[in-house]
Image 1 (cartoon, rainbow, N blue to C red):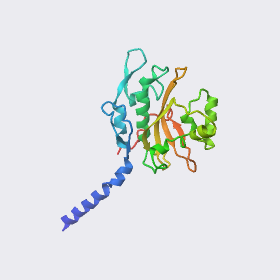
Image 2: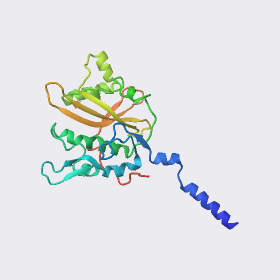
Image 3: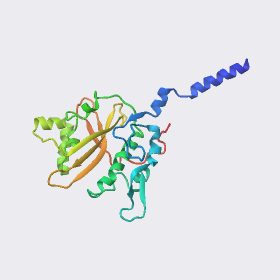
Image 4: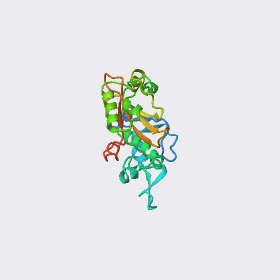
Length: 247
């Protein structure tokens, strides 16, 4: 009799100690990834779970970066080395160097963002609706040459003016040199609504030679159809805190 009671107690304790599937999913949610990641052997990856982030930060990126630059003294080979030695987005200083850093900007930014992300509710019916000109803020859809021009775009965004509004109602030309592609959908800022992690590339096709590449997220705003563009930089993308949950 005592043996049966002890066995029942063990089963109850095990049930209490073992988290349910929903609890496990909440602790380490998984997110669909579009376009793969630039980790060697993982180029066709279609999803990433939060519990994998620490390991993937140490995994080799497909193309190493020479560091210090042009001294043949060593290389940076993964996101952990890149973020600690160089800093996010701090490698390229010329158009020729930008393609070298793009895999790190894209993959390391994504991994750090997913390291603390959650699953939220969708504000849009589809990704294509979210990335339509009617929802995009002017700050991501158009390239401007000066800080004053960018501040003007920020003011328009704050007024709820979308990129589509500028094209349809204010005779702006759609900027064909700007390309925006989805990477993942996740609640990055913790407000309960899914954000859209995207890559934004710009390459001048006219009489200029400027290019740029950025990763960040588009965040739906309450009571507004126009999203907010948050671009990742070296302040936002850093190595995760040691307390980052991995279970």
